[in-house]
Length: 235
Image (cartoon, rainbow, N blue to C red):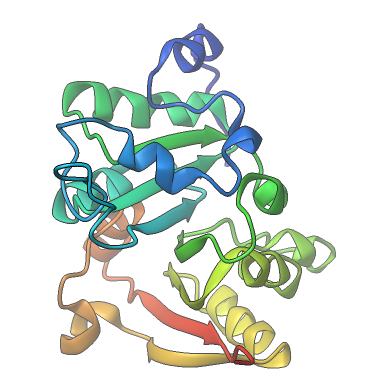
């Protein structure tokens, strides 16, 4: 994928309140950031009359968030969840910043960084759900280790997910999806839900939030594959 360089992208990122400049400093403390958003914050992270938070807020992350359409829509539908979007290309991340600037959210933060640094950004068990949406398929065999649903990254997800955590993956690339299923099974992940045609699957499509790519590929008639997987965690 050829990315168009956007002049001033780094300056936009540095000036944005949504971009966490040094995410490693929040490792293990992301929920406290959510709770500190102020009176505009909604959901279980709020305190009343000095009481403790009513409930442990959920922390969901999207890896390779692109232009941010998915996380922007999800954050509106679920204001009690904190969303963190990770995107390595600053020229793409500015698009997400533009959406949030035009239609603000108090439960979203963004990181310009690589998925390889997940364990430096999030503490063990800190994340409740990970979304992979239309990840780069890296079709050449020698690039298999770069595929986000591959076992190299599954080991990272295993480290940061909570015991009840889930990984959701959507793609229109059947070869990548088959690869993802094989990789997950090989390292012991279990399948909670699976479909090869999401928009014809009544149960899994319920509440589905589409990404920009999903809208584009669906218009072309491409079936969308999706799984939700989890690990068997020793008690």
